[in-house]
Length: 352
Image 1 (spheres, one colour):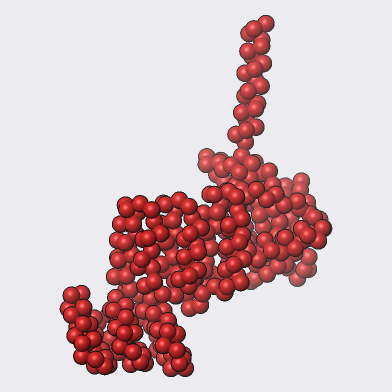
Image 2 (image 1 turned 135 degrees about the horizontal axis):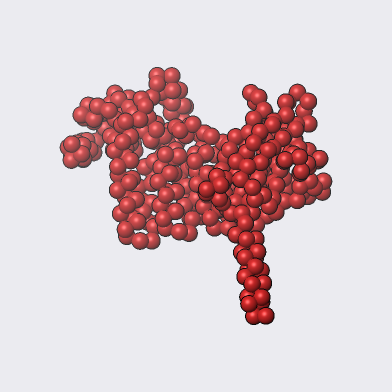
């Protein structure tokens, strides 16, 4: 009897272990323009209520035959096979997110794999509150994954979209998912210094915080505000790594693409239209954060500022983005006071 009992227990635990270790994953689809659609998987699941954001839960196979049918008869259906994971590298409790493009022709594009959220959407669901939630979820996804601002960060994310994304990220219970969402948010948007500070403080873990801070440098309208970001880090070793990374990044600014004449002319006109010195400086710092400049351009920009203090701050920043650094000495002629000229000359000498 004892042997039989042991055999039964062994079988029971094997079954329980198999269920516990079974990969339970979710597929999430959403359209780039809000076009509603239905999803059919392996001819088994067919959600008849068209929606623009669909989440299909508890999937355990590695590959699924998927058919997406749009309500717009002008859009051809999508028939494809999606790999949730490779059989040799299974995943568990993950959301695999796909963007459904309608232009130039219907297609699906993989976006990300995130730790599964605690929110389990019931689809389809005609209830009004769920529809509102779905629209909100789609808006958040577009902000985090689809804003795709150009690498120069010509414009920062607007305050409303920023607040929407931050609220969504902070309300995410799963810590790993929160970190991945933050990383994707940084990857696809550009930020002001105050917005960047909010993002940094979202991350509780030192290693991930340092990673996000490095990524943010390329997404700022003014990279020089990040010089003191080491204070956000708790450990001295992390602070040292960040300072070294920041210093090396600043030294590479002169390797950026030179500003083309049309863009430069637009910025000059924009600066001249500003009466506030701070706003003028903000545009100038954007230029040296994302473009390399000639010394003659730096001199022209400095001449548009009224106060020597602002001119001094700008030339010190512009030094790192200037390709012909030795010619910066000619910029001293636009400085009014001799003592400021001397101080800048000494600073330039030390940089050489």
